[in-house]
Amino acid sequence: MADHKPLILVTNDDGITAYGIRTLVQVMQQLGTVIVVAPNSPQSGMGHAITISNPLRLYPSDIFADVISYECSGTPAD
Image 1 (cartoon, rainbow, N blue to C red):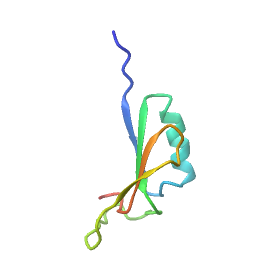
Image 2 (cartoon, rainbow, N blue to C red):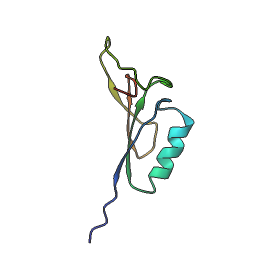
Image 3 (cartoon, helix red, strand yellow):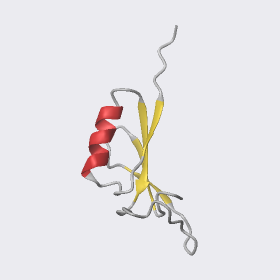
Image 4 (cartoon, helix red, strand yellow):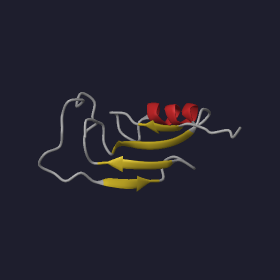
């Protein structure tokens, strides 16, 4: 039987540079393959907000070694 690791999406509302997401990525890497998509700036308290007037942008990030990660211009709900 093949050993398949789960694919884990890690995201937050505090931004891609937040200390907490770095810790979460390290822990989740022990359980599976991690991909990160997080806001490019803190978005705390914006859980129900959506971006209407600006295009959403997704940019590759190298903030986490050996983890595919992207920073996005939108809110967590986007």
